[in-house]
Length: 134
Image: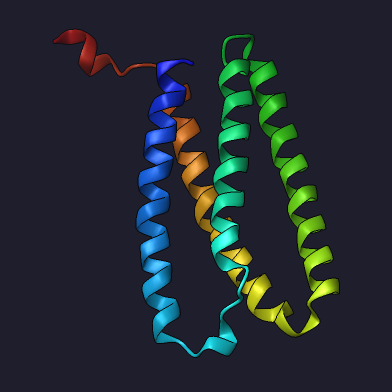
């Protein structure tokens, strides 16, 4: 495994730990009818999808830039279809938990998407000129 992937894994686990702890504190404060029982499992799901998509993106950076862009867009589309499918299936099975699940899913999706975007932008940027002067 490359050092960039290990570094991303470490950052993802730290981010997930902090975000999960904050979520736990918030879920202890708000009433239980507003919290989905599937919420803890969503963290593991988003960690797995983030690791998988970063793996493919990392390998695509070794090729031409257009391949990286295509892979990035393809991973976004595939993840959106998977996320929509999971939400639809869960809501059809657990109608009483639909609103808390969708709200929790959306919030976690938003945070993990921002984290992934920032991480891949950091990795794909060339080293700054300031570091070369030193």
